[in-house]
Image (cartoon, rainbow, N blue to C red; front, top):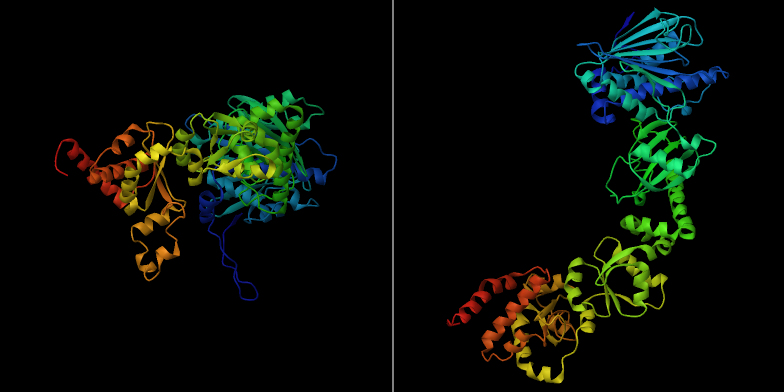
Amino acid sequence: MGNKPKNVADKEGGYSFQVDLKGVIRLLSENLYSSGDVFLRELLQNAVDAIQARKGEEPGFDGGKIRIEYRQAAGRQARLVFSDNGIGLTREEIHTFLSVIGQSSKRGEMRRGSFIGQFGIGLLSCFLVVDEILVKSRSVREKQGYLWLGRSDGTYQVEEGPESPGEGGKGPGVGEPGTEVTLVLKGGMASRYREEKVFSLLKEYGFLIQVPVEFVGDGGAKRVNDGFIPWRQPFCSNEEILRFGELLFGEEFSGVVPILGEGMKGYAFISERQTSAAAEGRHKIYLKDMLITEEGKDLIPKWAFFTRCILNTESLTPMASREGFVSDHALAKARNEIETCIFDYFVALAQYDVEKLKRLTMIHNVAVKSLAVENEQVYKLFFPFLTFSTNKGRLTGFQLVEAAKKVPAYYCTEVDDYRRACPLVGNGDSVLVNAGYIYDAKLLQLLKRYQRGIRMEVFDEASYGELLEEPTTAMKEGLAGLMAAARKALAPFRCGAALKQFDPVKAPVLYVAAADGFLDSVLGEGGFSGFLEGFDIEGMGILESPDNGYGAKLYLNGRNPLVRRLAQVKDGEIVENMVKVLYVHAMVAGHYTLGERETEVLNTGLIRLIEYGLGGDL
């Protein structure tokens, strides 16, 4: 009995839509499913749902079973046969559920929400790998069985078949209701879906299924889902759970967090190795015992990327592809429950196993920092164990607090700032933190809120004045001429000059940019000249600081031998040219961007100094 799509007019003169099945299949493969592998999950899910439906129809039924056969004769296409002893399909249901795209096959008194599959859509996914699908089925409500043959061109046939799909000993059992789906893999699909891969995928998808699933291939018969599931045991030790996680994910873990929520059970295993927030495919998230996704990006808190989770949920809503979950209230609630479980675990460690907490925090330093900047409780709990890069080596938060109670402590918000300032601080009493890394500056900014009586300041241009020693009176008098020449030489660059003495002695100068170095550079190059025309810029004072006339400053080191020798040079032009060269050298050493004037100094100033050294005219 064949059926083909027709344009059918109803009594009102309207027409039914026609569906190009091949076009739908192409859409499935290109847009809905991430992989063709899903046909195995869909068939497995259909079998599980059919058995569940039979339990609803026959309350005393508890002998559900699923069998998958894989056969491939030499030089022939591979054949897959899925059979179950579930509720089966009547003739009417075959037409209704197998031949109408998107129609759910869930019927009877069972709620549709108790199933996650749809037989019509699930079966349709098989056309990703075959051209024909053969279904043998007998309903618990009928003695007669039926055959349904569907083709990828959109046609199908229905015939009377044996009383049971299991006649001959291949299906669920002689005389039993149930369904058998036969697939002959097309083209190169046989090489893609070899026996070992099919079995491996079935184990992935059906690891938690509570109905026995048997796989029969050339290698004999074996169970798909005979794994040990800790949360289903009356008692399970922590060591057994850890071993379960290590076998499941193939790595060692330092701890395990039981996850319990409304309609949700599982574990979050804490990795022994440093991980990345960008890592994907790290989890195993199941919905009603069937694997949905390995990402968990919408369910597992982002800050918990140092965990690997296995979770079985009951109440979440799957997406159309059943490779993720719909973003709704239930998903948000589940995510909050998972976050609470993981956080409470760390709180317990702070009370009962501080050493373990310290070790985990050091391994997952960045992950914990990301949480601490957002949560006051986490901040107070973890800050003592977090580590920071400083001029004294790597210090914990506890060591930083203790040091800041006794000596000045600063932090640089940029790595380049730290590199410039670190030689000045050296091994002196002050502590300088490199807070240019993610989250560090924010954590140190928050420190004053939770810790009283400490000094932890941002290291800025004003901090240099505190670290650099004032010159002696004799030093000021001896270098007065040089300083006057330096101010004159640096004026075109909108940079001030100041005399200090500092370590290391071998550093002749130190350049410190203005707080708004960008504005200074643009104004210096005349970038705003049209806009500012007519304004009394100097009178407004926006280009000057009350201390030295400019925000940017070049500090000359009165202890440096080169600076002292330069002060003895009588030729003013030579002195000014040398100051400019030192200025550009300091900018390059400090990783600052050079402007047009600074670049010109490189091109001409150095050449003039070489000429002077060779005895030429300047």
